[in-house]
Length: 408
Image 1 (cartoon, rainbow, N blue to C red):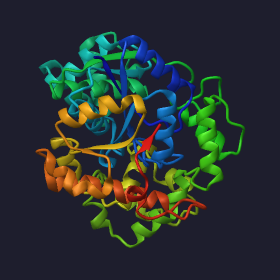
Image 2: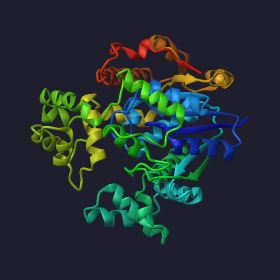
Image 3: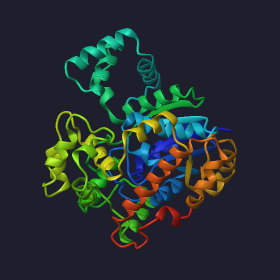
């Protein structure tokens, strides 16, 4: 039995996602598809345009059989932490046989070589890495150039492309876990990840920008358009970075530089730079003022979320060391019920289908209980904060406990 694993955000689900899903099933000849999906906040450090329940509906209507939530502590990390969490979930099912990543290059053998360099750190690579760090390059850039020097002929620009970066980190995580899951990659089609122009196969970035500007949306399957429209009509979207500006200011104004610097990733004076620019009138102007060569927009946005949710260093370090502690079920199709039962029996971490039964469920597997509770508490908090941004829906508090698993 072939079970395909995919790692998604579907923010929102568009035709490029549909191409990836269909191509991945065809490539692996999969019998079932299991997706792990970011919840209400995503890897680029922003709230999702619509919530995780609506995006789960999109996934199921597209043909995904089971959707699990990537715990928030991984969903809002950089590529390395995001990969650790998402691959950790797929591996923990003990059912997923194959995983297919979309990438700009489409060369799984090259990505595997790069992952080996990162893990094994050969001496020449380490020498090159130190040399670039001494020149003042950030660690990601120093590592990128050191790898290209080691492999000779590899274009450094290829390692800057978003999906290539993620694919490399996914392979690093698979190798760290000694996973039996077989990795594949298919070349991304349509617009690039950061392309803001609507095309026949647009990026999710372009779709979100069009929604923000009130333009006509193209490039979405019919079911995806209908769900997006329903959520907006019912006041549960669209949600954008600008919508958390007041929450961010409140948290920072009632905090201190010392408190912020105890959170994960607040080094090189970032806390001071943020606090010094709280007088800016909009989120856009705040981000522009804080941004520097060292502080990229994505890095700043993630630190904003770490401030809102009080994400301390030890929480991220423990999560990345011990991995996800549960499989939170968001939805499944009727045909996926069989494989869901098998996952429930075989998985190395507990399957959570009812949030109110979380404490009881985590006793069924050998997990790090304090960390499991901390990860789940952050998921609940993230949903509650996100739900406060709804314009109409009155079910704004404890939504994780009120929404049933979606069945399709």
